[in-house]
Length: 530
Image (cartoon, rainbow, N blue to C red; front, side, top):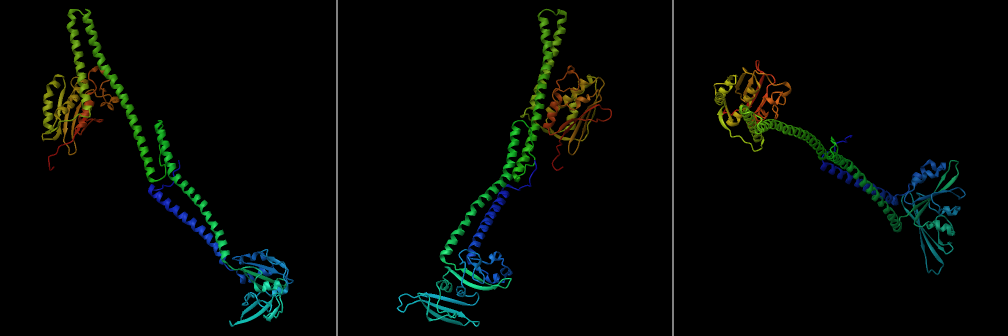
């Protein structure tokens, strides 16, 4: 499985994802607010009529490209020299205008304004009051007034246009009432052929009603936040699932496989540091479990072999004893031969007693509650006394003994009884499996880290195929189990040395002249201050 980039710790991953999610929400909110703000800003954005008039597209007749100059609900319309509508950004412009109607529209950038008032209850027929405000180049204001009757005829005063009467349409363009809530201007221009055209510029006035309508419409933009929020939530859930759920699924699959007996390694499952560590721990646990299972199978095999060996070692003498006794009881053994048969029974019984004693010692040293009773003693003096006590046995067996023990004391903390039993097992094996005339060697070498005892001989040696298993239970130094011995002595000896904090090993390269050499080590007991 391809591993992803490590995600760090779980806390760090959640913190980063939370901060990133918060920033994403802020970005979404900022984007929606920006869109809403742009819609609201367009209400206040004035049209750029100066730029429109300066654009060459106006003279070339490419009016559609001039839409970008409008803003805030502003529109414009183009009329030809005859007053016919050529093009408009809105459909409510008049299809044709007379010259008088066009003249009533104030010029763009001229600086004039006309205020209209309705006069009610006048006896002289006056109906409308027009007040014209104009500003010259010096900024001085020039005011003119005109009073119109109900037919839009001038009955008092007059404006600068010199007209005595107006039509209803001219009055509407003159007073700006043709388009409600709008300001209207005109700007003459010549097209590419030199024909004079009129550009009507209509700029919407922002009223409270228009603002409220636009505000309500713009509020719908905030509904975009809901799908964007849900999309962000889905994205971050997917990201967290990929970083956390997938590694957990891998671990779960490995656990199920392990439960089914299939060995699966998780490896680098990705995800946060804690999940990766769980995967590494799982692999270590799986390795330990596999090793434990292999050890269990080995122990089961050893236990089965142990039972088979015990059965064999017990069955042989029991069979001989049982058969001999049956023969004596049935009168099949002549009286002259009965003593010989009884001696055979005695030897087999002694062999069973020795085997039972070996089993007892092995079970005792292998028990978890087996403890030593140690004391501090001179190992050199201990070995001299031990070998002196065994010398007659060695000599009567036809063996020679060559000890090499230093004169200076070598101090250790040992259990004399158990250490003697360990040496007994080594000497008993040497006497049992070697021919007459074999020389036994016992050496003691002091050391700062360990005291070494070497028990060796120059006898027949141990077969190479048995050297690696010589310390296992019921493994003997001979190919035949009929040569005596239970095969438990070296197992007991190893356990005793281990309980002393030492060890025993079979030297694969003994000294010249020696065929078998056991190396025993014990921790020294240095006096205080050394």
